[in-house]
Length: 413
Image (spheres, one colour):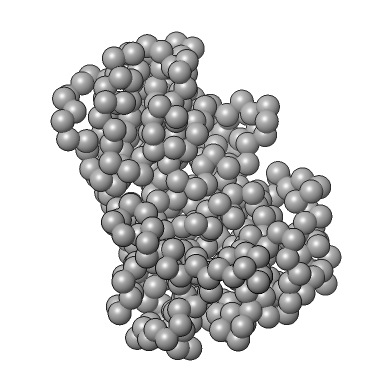
């Protein structure tokens, strides 16, 4: 495992050490903004010429992260079963190199041997096992952190708290923002999902669906028809997204004592052979971790549902710990019920601390105020924000707390 190369004092908290790495990755993305702008422009050109935007399943989490997202594209496809053309764009993420199995390898080779223009959310050196003729087919790479950059180790998970996942979310959406900007400069605006957290969203989103009984199906065009949006300057969307991420990073750094308490609760539960249960409501956890079926990962994962009754195991009991990274306003009765069972509940939501919940020694709240509705970047002249932030925020918070947990357990490399 590559150690943190940042100049951090020895007394820096485990969470702060991880967040220092995150800060470095945001700075690196800013330095690479010219490359990400260029990649966005390259992705936009064939789409503006009539191609399709596809997100094939190479890394298993990526289609879920990208499809059906508030602030993301409505008119996209996962690419399964489609005949792709040279005008199509396939935007993929790469699995962790050590967990790229034969099926993923074959799917990647087949895609690169095909016709679409392929853009990769990842590093070029992660394709070193492929023939150079296939690697040359890639039209652009976002770059990002190496897989061994991070902190702590637990069995096969080394590093336990890496920054590669953070970088995939950060750079993947930053490049997407620059693609949207390039589309506006070509006189086109992609149809963007409005969050269903907002009133009227279902009706608004459904209004773009095109249905035909001749074709026997339905779909959404990639671009709006007859809608002018003032062109976005190169770098506007990407830098705005990074600005938002930096703001959330500062919010977490100001809460180091709370993050440390969360890690302490988790370590206590582990020592006492109790359960540590985590829920990250959104699109990509735990899939992004690519955990094997026989995983001995040091937390259990619940279903990423905003409904605690669905997300929390009925088998959780007194002394167990829940880390609930929420998405909707807090369900006060459900939290009260968990506390009544003796569960320690670590909680956050973009809607703020639940009103009406009395202080409780087993309840720990921390702020992570990404914008309700998830999408984070305003587009002047357009009624919906772009670029979801939840996965970036959940990754920062989860791994910062995991570092506090790991440090107390002595899980050093």
